Length: 266
Length: 220
Image 1 (tube, chains in turn orange, brown):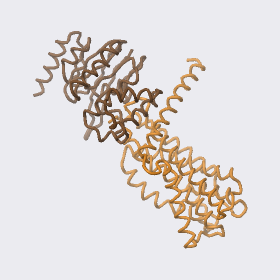
Image 2 (cartoon, each protein chain N blue to C red; image 1 turned 30 degrees about the vertical axis):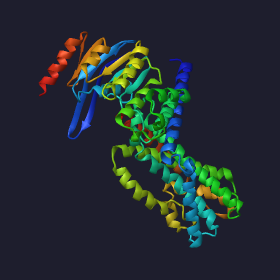
Image 3 (cartoon, helix red, strand yellow; image 1 turned 90 degrees about the vertical axis):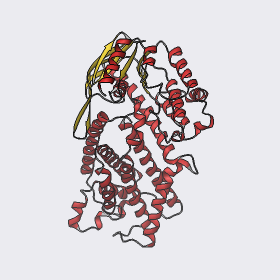
Image 4 (cartoon, rainbow over the protein chains, first blue to last red; image 1 turned 180 degrees about the horizontal axis):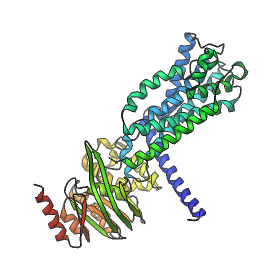
């Protein structure tokens, strides 16, 4: 095969995949949010309610987070990141089964189902984060971020981590229901360890090294560096985070290949 | 042309493996119509899913050099929590079709009226059958895979199916599974019997039917 015709085949396949993911995205929006009341606005209103609730709770109780940072900014950056990495696996575990009937169409594959749900979850969390940031800045609860691009970098890294974890667990969950059983307690327990509720710098020196082994802690630190600039001292290990994401992505893709081969449409 | 080469399919079951299809090979050319007879559970639907590409064979290869439909069966291939219209939109999107035109056809063919805006899970068997068939007809294929199309629906519906499938699309290739041997006799030129994972081919319907009956008797 010549390289141009190979490129043409690739282009055609990419177009098909794009169509399928778009169709699945619309289908997910409809089954999840329906056409009642505010419909698909729930996509980001739901995470916004979560984040606002947590922000209010933490403000009222003056949560001790080991720094002098404004609590609103702290809660917003922390809890939004949790929603980002936690909701994607939540939605990808068990994503195949309700879509089995659609896999009668040979171009609809498990990876398309995962992609559609990842786009939806990441999109919802991102719109919620941006809207709340703008709103808090507008009413004066929050100063604009010190460096928006660094915030974006941290956000994208957490999104990548969440997406690869989601696809890996989603694919593994097709083989054993243990994944579903363990993910819920695990994600719940990871919440306090994920960096949402503390700055690494506030931890004892001996603990700092170990806490950075938890991938999302690194991402949250980067987001806070972008938000607060010189007000905070952050600790993170970028190569480690990138390594984790890459390894998880490869594992996820290999597992998806396996389940794609084994899938039996309803 | 569809070329099926040495295809086997093994499903894991409790306490071992079950070989549903065992080293099956055949070709289906443009315009050819092959009817497959076999007992319940002989692997007919599995074979059709493999040919459609929805499922992968355990070993062997299937090459498709013409466009092949998904398995046209009643009930399958749509999402029951979506409405009938949403299913039409979904399928129009993945096959890059103008869904407005398709909706008109589906509405006319199914005569479902307002029910098209209700979730498919609230439909009766017959309504689902009408919707499934209409959706299958909105996309043109060179080869149609037909799984038990005569099982559901009333006489009028069968008449409509007959017109759409065998009159308007009589020049297409088809792979047909039916419980009713007469349906197969009526519509196919080539016949096959699937039994114990093996497929035997017959040019003559009566031979195929005899073999099929023999298999049915043997098991009781």
